[in-house]
Image (cartoon, rainbow, N blue to C red; front, side, top):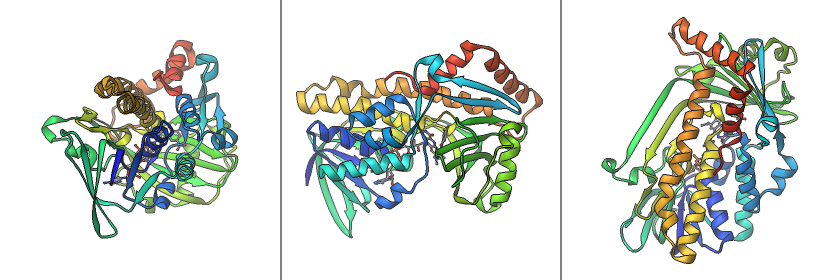
Length: 389
Ligand code: RFL
Ligand code: PHB
């Protein structure tokens, strides 16, 4: 089999890239390890920057998002009972959209099906070959049979644990990493949101986040030690801990109910450079991970797709390779700024085990400054709604 762009991974990055390329008349094949149900059931991101919203529209998959998503004009950052409102719209003229990653991937799969693109699920043992020759190849096993796909370019959209990044020789790539000594325990519950906008809560008991999917579905998180498992967290324990970490005025409105999903995600910052190796390009979580505190992971994956789809269209339609030559440098410039913001938000809002009393005062002073300075709030808002592409 031959195609123009082989895409490893059918998560949000791979699907959006495939969608944009096919609409420009470029053929793709997506090779996905899991089943479609597996991809669609992963409860992850919830917030789209406006640039991501516009990309969904450009890709022809904006209709349901525009009908069912919830534009948010601001968010709250709180410290015990101090609630700082960050008014995105007033400060930047932009807003964000509450629309879950599961909905994004569902819309993209549906659009890909309608276009009749090739998505092969259940692939194993993917090998990426011939990256410095005139044509690249991808070998994989599906249904017990070994297959070979040749292509002009390979897009590595296979997440943090994929094979694409590891295909670049170890001595030719450099990793930058910070692992945080805690994780986020997240629950989904069919209850009304405790607040009309998200609450990022700093507290003496650790961080909590009140997010949502719709009027009757919430996504709430609490910071937990890495040694905890979901079995340590009954629903009762979760609700008690969550309600003492958010401001008392919000806790008084909290509606609790059974959780319908519960999982723990460790927090890490990670970047692997470069993003290009011959005919291979890394995209999204395959190349970088941010802690979820700034809601940047999916959005950063989409900005990589933005740069790469334009570069691939120029190369394949017009023979102009300047975009693919610059892809790594251009994408990394934005990636590092989102890394900085996610790291800063994480440091501002989490309690570190064994920290000294100075650290807690620094967090409190940062929040107090945010409450008093419009300049500080605008800086946060500008980063949260998304830096320009
Ligand atoms: P994904 O989603 O990991 O998809 C990769 C796909 O590749 C497949 N795969 C392979 N396929 C073939 N061969 C192989 N060898 C393969 N290895 C892997 C996998 O099965 C999978 O389908 O990466 P992608 O597409 O780059 O998308 C990235 C986003 O999923 C991620 O950045 C976000 O979910 C991060 N994130 C958030 N991002 C935001 O922008 N806003 C948020 O509010 C937000 N909240 C979150 C988050 C991530 C979280 N967790 C669990 C890490 C909240 C959480 C709790
Ligand atoms: C979510 O809704 O899952 C969510 C929202 C904001 C974040 C992280 C996760 O910063």
